[in-house]
Length: 90
Image (cartoon, rainbow, N blue to C red; front, side):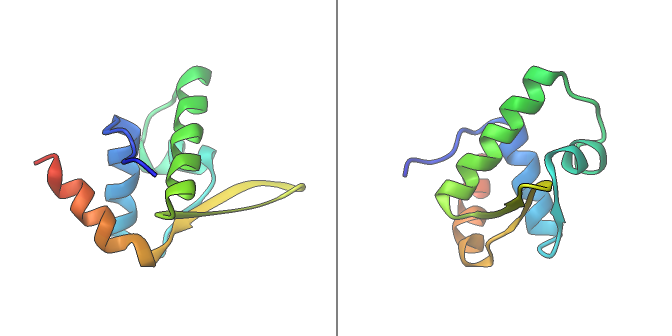
């Protein structure tokens, strides 16, 4: 799979997971606690799409059930690759 976009959401989320590798949260929790700002419904959809791309890339794990929203967490096997991705932008 190609590299994820160097989007604000992708970078903020990955930096948060690197700093807090045991963190787990839903889209709403990430919006409220990690980004500290309210998002428009379009931005929330975009963020969820990016989270799902990061799951497909193998950097995050997405666990869900019919009764709850998907909970995203770090796939520690992808940590070295994530750090390399984050280092490229600086």
